[in-house]
Length: 147
Image (cartoon, rainbow, N blue to C red):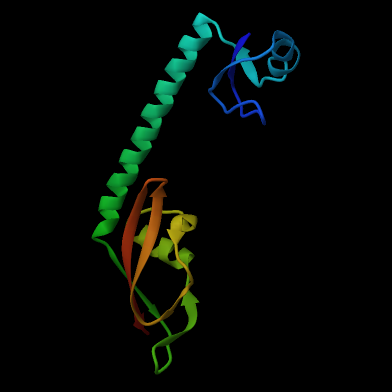
């Protein structure tokens, strides 16, 4: 019996795969548990339409992320913090502070998307990467000044 998997099934296949399985396995386990549907003409057509809609949605998300990356490209953020004589900050600058500074400039980014190896602890210019999409990353320049 041919079935179309609705979810990943260990040792069987991934979501969206068309498989040939034994009829008893399909009727007694896969279909009742909502893991698969029988592959008929109508369900295959519906699956293909859903797949195309998902591709369009992903393309739109990527396009929006690229537009946001272009907007971020020319932005420089200046943050002022207390610092010692050698330029070391008392404390550090976190991704939350950078997200808040971007929000004040009209760019809303979740702090989880700001990629930093470690918090910024020195006065000066620093480049920070922002992951907007799985394929789109933007670079932001953060200038830290002594207060």
